[in-house]
Amino acid sequence: MMSSHSAAGTPAPATLTSRRATFAAFAGAFLEWYDFWVFGTAAALVFPQVFFPEAPPTVALMQSFGTFAVAFLARPVGAILFGHFGDRVGRKPVLLVTVFLIGGGTFLMGLLPSHAVAGSLGAVALIILRVVQGVGIGGEYGGGSLLALENAPKNGRGLAGSFHQLGTPAALLASTGIFALVEQLPEEDLLSWGWRIPFLVSGPLLLLGFYIRKNLPETAAFQKDTTRAKSAPLISLLREQPKMVLIGIGARMADAVTFNVVNVFAVSWVTSTMGMSSDAILTGFVISSAVQLVVLPAAGRISDRIGRRPVYLTGLAICATGGGMLYFPVLSTGSTAGTWAMIIVVHAFGTGLMFGIQSALFAELFQTRMRYTGLGIVYQGSALLGGGPTPMIVVFLTAAAGSWWPAGAYLFAACALSALCIWRAGETFHKELAETTSDSSERVADDAQGTAADQEVQSP
Image (cartoon, rainbow, N blue to C red):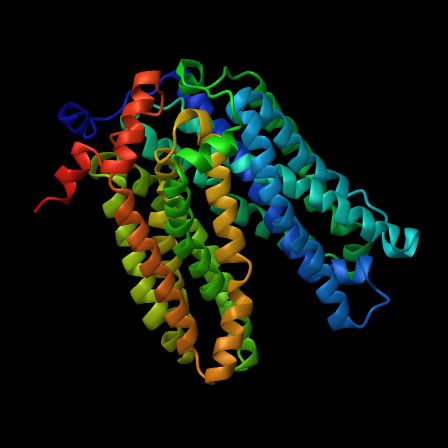
């Protein structure tokens, strides 16, 4: 065990396959999040007029956001469905399907008829494609991250996993840029054909992603694994590693809650309570996303050297103090520079230190034969519990208190929960991802009693 610790400090050799797999993971994540951000922007700016023009403006906006929300309900279905086949059949064939569901769904959205042409049929088709897209997204995260991680050398998994996570800020910058361009069109052109351009761009991205994945072999860890169970991976996961499922969901709660408090809720808070423009917050997150392009790989590389736990706990501490205690007082000053600085601290560094290593950390919690399913359940479960209801809960609490402090307290509590889960998980960066039958038996014992390396880390 000590030899694996010493090896963790040396640079990991990268093979051609591992580099290609890492790029393929980034490309898939970029496509996933590009589609997410493009749809979210269109739902706020153009879909109310394009698909729901007969409803009052507020109702039309709610209907538009309703189409955005249905994907979150479909994601757990995709996580379970594709996790099953990804753990039983292989990562590669499943990922060839998910990339088509995500990219193809987005591309077809750009071809939908408006309400003026087809009446309510356009909105119905939009909802159907959004559900299809949500199922694909639910299966993409687990397999996309494993594409990089299960081909990476042991002491380079944090860095490899961080490149998968880089797809999120890169996609935000790309989608924001292309929508900024089409918004320069006259309103009539924007609502008739201009809004379609960002969606149609997904077509070439889909073909590129499919080509890259098609020419990759199955992941090394999956091919080496000799422990595949005859029972369904979900059943095996809940029977053998329920503790790790709960730890993973709890560990990611802080990330999900922090983003929704400092972005989604904060935008409505500054506009409705303080009478300020939301431009400062939205621009701040674009700047912060650019900063994350550097922070995420740095976090991954540092975690390969010193471990996942200290990096993750540092991110939690930044979110708890910066987001839970300082963020809203700084916003209350009305300072644009101060707002941007706090967003960069909390989002780029706080959540960035966590987000950058989540792929590696969560993959290391689970055995190979149920890892795809475990990653999907953790990611989509935490999004459903920590992401979806957070804005509504915080709006209710702050309205009842007449102050911002319940939002900060809620964020702080989420960080405390995640810190407890990370501590209970122990250190994971020394663990093998490719297992034999004997390795699997040892790992079950490790999960119950703690490994010798974990005891080493926890001792004074």
